[in-house]
Image (cartoon, rainbow, N blue to C red; front, side):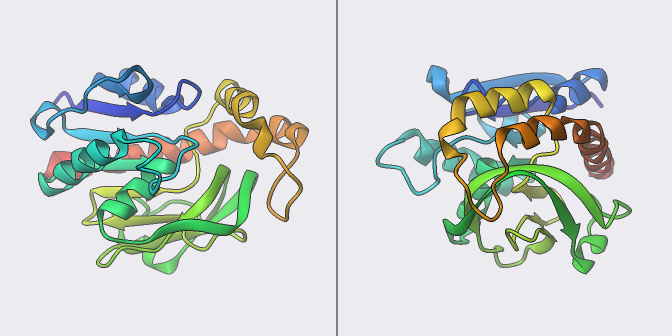
Length: 236
């Protein structure tokens, strides 16, 4: 089956990066909604997977970003239709919000390369089963979310307890980034450098750039996660 992948991109500097490499190499058909170009959100019949990327806005800023209302409707319809939905950073927060969980400013910003630790419950999910207990991931967020009712809490870090959850084995929220490449990290730093202020879990620019060596390992985690999602899709 040739999967139809649709991704939502909120800003030019947070694109799918290595996700796009993976899905194209695996023969998927790819479409997209670029919110910053005022493009329309799709109906669930138009895709098999919905991937929701990150961005500097917050899910509760509907007065500043009115399109958030329509995007949440799109995500909710995808979940209700039984689609695979993957959210990264802002995308994860959007999924949490749609599933009725609280999204709010965290006590710490988390910016840079920090280890993520899987919970014991993660082993019960198809997508995290068999992944390393600890791996490095890139972070850039000031908000966090509660785990929605019925979801499995899958990952945490020293700076943020709720890093990931899985809902119905086909809806995956990742607060962290495993799709980044050296080029995409440079783009985020250039666009959001004002966020880099001394804090417990904020690295300086050079540390983040030097940490680009972690990208290959992070991309491997991504490929294993997406591969598990492909198998989940094939069984349905």
